[in-house]
Length: 196
Image 1 (tube, helix red, strand yellow):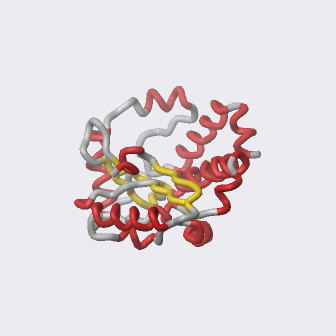
Image 2 (image 1 turned 60 degrees about the horizontal axis):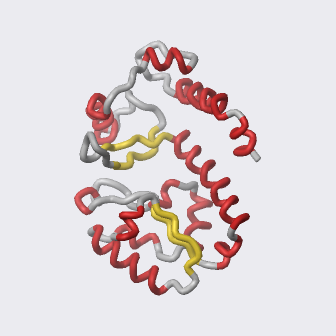
């Protein structure tokens, strides 16, 4: 219901979210804007390379002077830098949790049979070279009580994600997927990942 109400006026909701984010970042040295238009002037579009050193300081040295309430850093790649470490704040993780609920509710309404079997979710992927630098468990995105619930329906144990290399993790995942006769749902972030 909250999602449906928000969908009626997404601009208003996005402005409210921006205001909440700005309010939570008291440690920014600039005078914080109060609306989107002023935000665009105060914080012009930039590239990751302009923020990389500050993010690295916070990630490696635990220096919280750049972004407050960071719970974890997730690596991602793109066309401009090989690896970007994206800070996930407490509020952002809460937003991720809020988005999953209406998505799953909609899937269950349209395809109730997904509740009758196991599921495979891949939210992120960690290359072999970075496996020692981060927690590989996608369940860490969720609150503790949801982690337990989700682990009960997964086709493979989360220990698969702690394999020493990407290749060994893929192989173990493949074995579990092939042996799961009641696989009801696959949710992946990238088709290439599934093909690997």
